[in-house]
Length: 98
Image 1 (cartoon, rainbow, N blue to C red):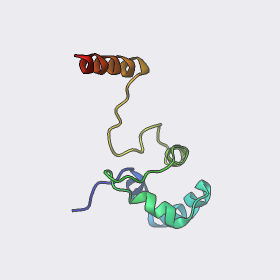
Image 2 (image 1 turned 90 degrees about the vertical axis):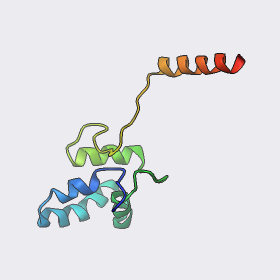
Image 3 (image 1 turned 180 degrees about the vertical axis):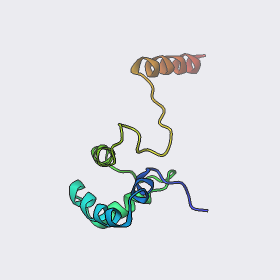
Image 4 (image 1 turned 60 degrees about the horizontal axis):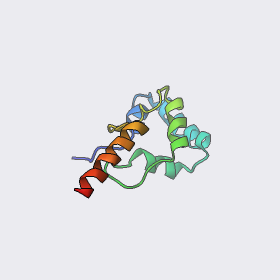
């Protein structure tokens, strides 16, 4: 079975009819100012892989596909506020001192 992908690019492309799929394969890389092969590689990134897409490019892709910020990701992103991070670090430091 194929490994899950990091982003929903392939799923969004597969929603298109053949004519639009072919057109999108040409115009999206141009819009992003990347090579066709780079776009192809972005579509295949495994969810557990180290490679990633630059943030600005992800936002552009979300716009192209009519998605809101964060909707292109195919994995959960844990969001923590700065206050939470500071409290967690303080707790870790207290534990280390015991």
